[in-house]
Every structure is written in C-alpha cells, then in structure tokens.
Amino acid sequence: MRNGPVASGKATAIRTLELIAIVALFASFFLSYLGAPVWDYDFWWHLATGRYIVTEKHLPDKDPFSLTSDLTENKNPFPEVESLILKQYWLAQSLFYLIYVYAGFQGIIFLRAILLFLTLLVVYRHMARSGAYSFVSIVLIFLLYKTTSMYMGERPVLFTILFTAVAFSLLDDSGRPRGKKIFLLVPLMLLWANLHGGYIIGDLFLLIFMFGEAVRASLKRSNYSQHERRLFFGVATAALVVSLVNPTGLEAFYMALSSRYAVLKEAIQEWQSPFFLISNHIYPASLYYPYFVLLGLFPLLLLVRRRKMNMLHILLVSLLGYESIISSRMTIYFMIPAAVVVAGELSAAIGSVCARWQADAVRRAEHLLSLSAAGLICFLMVGHLQGKRLLADGIDRSTAPVGAVDFIEKNRIQGNLFNEYAFGGYIAWRLYPWKKNFIDTRALNIVAMKENDFIVSATSLGAGDAGRSGEKDIRLYDRLLDHYRINILLFSQTKLYGNVTPLILELMDDDHWVPVYCDPMSVVYLKNVPANEAMIRKYRLTNDTVYNSIILRCSSLALRNGVNPRPLLAMGDVFYKMGRLKDSLQAYRYALRRDPSNSFAREMIDKIQAEKAVKGP
Image (cartoon, rainbow, N blue to C red):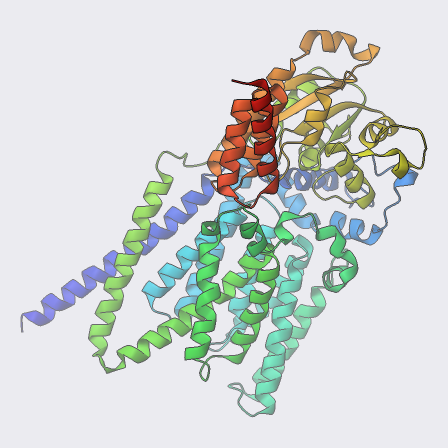
C-alpha cells in the first residue's frame, strides 16, 4: 500500500526533473545562438541592399554597388542570374535593415537566435508527435543543434531553415491527421517565396506529398476520406501557385535545375561536397559528425524497418541525403527531416525490442534516460557557454575589414577601389554611394569575378599568351588595375582556405604600390602617384610590418583549424620571402604533417635544405 504513492511520487519527481532539464537544454541552445556576434561576409550585402530597397522604394534593376557593373565591356553573360539574386531576397533584406535601424546589430543577433531556436522547437515537437522516445529526440535534437551552429550566418537562408522544418511538420501526417493547420501552407509559401529562393524546397515537399497521397489513393491505402483528400490537394495546389507570386517567378526553379549555371557554383565553398572539404584537409571530419551519424543511421534503419517505414519518408530523406553528399549547403535540409524520421523509426525499433517489458517499466526507463541525456548535454552546454557574453555585442572584426574601411573613410581617400570579393558587401554597407566596390560575395558579374581572381592571384601572361613577340611576361593584374583606374587596394592577407594572397607577395617588390594600413585582418595599398604623395609619406609601412601581420593571421587560422595545412604553407611562403629559412622550413614541415601528400611542401623543404647546404651553417 505504501509503495504505490511513493513510487508515484518518485515518478512525478523524475518527470518534473526531466521537463526542467529539457527546458534548460533548449535555453542553453538559445543562449548559444545569442552569444555569437554578426560575422557572415554575405550579411553586409544583404543589409546594404535592404537599405537601398527601403530608401529608394524599389528593387534594384542592376548591381548598384559595383564600379565594374557600369562598364559596357563587362556585359554580363548571365543577366537573368543577376536579376534573380538582386530580387529574390527583397523581403528578408528589408526586414534586416529595419531591424538594424530600430535595434542595431543586437536586433540582428536576436533575430538569428529566434529563427534557429524555433527550428529546433518545431523539429522536437514533430518528433514527439511521431511517437519518438524523448531520450532519442533529445540526442537527435542536439545533433541538429550542432549542425545549425554551422549555419549561424546572418542571411536570408535562416528563414529557409525554419520554413523547411515548418513545411515538413505541416505536411507529414505520420501518427496524426493533418487537420486545419494544413491551411497555413498557403501563407507560409507566399512569405517564403519573397524571403529566400530556397522556397523551392517547400515546393519540392508539396509535390512529393501530393504524389504520395495520389499513389495511396490509387492503391486504396489512404487514411483520408475523399473530402479530406480534395481539401489537401486544393490547399497544396494553392500553396504551389502562391509560391510563384514573387519578383522572379519561376526563375529560381529554372536556374536550380539547369546545368548551364553550374560554372557559377564552382568556386563557392558551400556548394562543395562535405567529403571534398574533408578529403582536401579544409575542414576536420569532426565538424560534420552529426551529419554523418544521421547519414549512417538512416540506411541502417531502412534495412531493419524496410517493410514498415513510410515510403514518402524514404523518398524525401534519400533525395535530400543524395543532395547533401554532393553539396555541403544541403546538409541542414537533409538533417531536418532525417532527424524526425530517424527519431520515429529508431524509437519504433527500440519499442519492438522492449515489447515484452511492462509498460510502466518502459515509461520509467524512458524518463530516466531522457533526464540523463538532457542533463549530460546541459552540462556540456554550460561548459561551452562559460565565459561568453549573454548577448554578443556588435560585429566580428575578424571577418569584416572594419579598421581598413575606417582608415579609407577617415582620410577620404579618392579614386577607385579594388577589393577581394569577401569584403565587397561590407564596403557597400559602409562606403556606398561615396565609393563603390569592385565585386562582392554575390559575384553578380562573372567577368568581374574572373578578373578579380586574376588580380588577387597576381596573374601574369607570357609573351606568347598575349600574342606579342619579343615582349617579356605581361603582368595581367597590373593591366587590369590600370584599366579600372584603381587607386586603392583592399584585401585580406589570406584567401578563402588560408593560402597567402599571392598579390601581397608580388607587391612587396613593386614600387608602384605602397602599403599604408595593415591589421591582422586586412591590408590597404595606395598607388604610388603624386596625388597620393602626402598620404604615402604619412602612413607608409615597411614590408616587414605586412609580413608580420600575415604571420599573425596565419598563426591564428592554423590554431583554429588543426587539419588545414594552407595557413602553415602561407607562413612558409612569407618566412621564405623574408629570408628566414629556418622558420620557413619548420612551417613547411608542420604543413606536411597535416597533409603528407602535399607535393608543394615537399618541394619547398628540399629547396630550402639545398639552399642551406650551399650557404653552410
């Protein structure tokens, strides 16, 4: 008699602690999202475009921020792509700008945190409705959180991440009827189509579920009445139609499906396969472990549960899994439905094993496991959050060239500006309309993008390539800088993956350009002409100052990423240029440890050892 109330009291206490632990877990996720400053390179272009739309009261017809876009010789071979990119984000960009006006950068940070937090909440609720054990859901939601941490850039894609979860939750009827909430698909798709081009994922979901319901009806296996099916198809069709009510119509579909535009994605990191990024020592495999867990669990569960698994789930997750293998950009869109499906199927598999146990014992075990999982993850999250600000203050100066742009603006340096594409958005935000950029991360004009690469890479042409006999190598980058009447150079010491920017090393021996500003993030050069004489005399830097800033930046990059050899190779290049052969040799050796197959590091090690042998100790 006594054991009954006591046992019941213990069970209630455990469930209460479990609920507290889950709330604390989600709170820690939210605080983690709040703790990161504004850092995304693309954000600045979106913010500048939002300001343009709000102040000019119309969408841009052509790139307003780039000096290269106005030139007739730079006729864009893909004007439809430029039009799509300029217009597809208009609502998100306007929202970004208005939030910034009224709440500053902390308002942007809060928006990012809310969108990602709601994504986790929608997925977790969907798991619960699908009958998943709570401890399974907690572990998988943590894996999803780790993946969302890779997508914390302040971009319109945040809306697509959330709306992917919402659309899947509204359409998926596993374990429950869809109900009247299905009507939310219509305003959802209308809103989504004007926030981000990723709305085509929502349309894909609609088409797959419509196909599935049609097949079920034809096989007489539908769980819905004829009236309910008509309602579903009507709402889904309406959602598809309203998704076309956007400034670009069907263009997003056409460009996503056409191979003609593949060339525009070749140099973009997020379109590379995660396996390419890992095998080429760009990112560690540990960064993608949540993705690999779900990518491995799904086919295993498919083998175990093949006769009971929802065919639409198999089709949808398989399709998104294939796309995620091709492009790391798609990993988050695979993870969202995969987490729900794996949670449900794994719980069903566990339940079948535990079927012979008493129901009360299973429930007690579930609550204890959930409490343990939530408590352990909370403990890990507290360690992660320790020492961090509750709400990040401002922007990340390691990704935005704040100091360099301050320098240019303070001194009102005249003339055209050349910048590498990562800095273009920030320049548009800070200096437009007084000064235009050369290019930005949208790379709207492929001609300008290629010429930007030629300049940053310090490309030269042989006399035969240029079609002139008797002439030495022609410095193509110099010709291009003259063509665009460039007076200021602003770029990072390193390229995207950590290699040293070749143009910096080239300019060290070039009297035509003088370094006048340098920090661990960026460097500014002025053209050595009479108009800049006073500025150069006041701010001229030594080559060693620039070299040391490169070493500092590369050291930081090498410490943050323990598998990428490129920052170490960059340090080797700089030390070699400085004549510090011992340091250069050591840097190349460290790079070779990270990538034993790197032939360049081996060649440089052999070359330096030979030089040291000639010079003697």
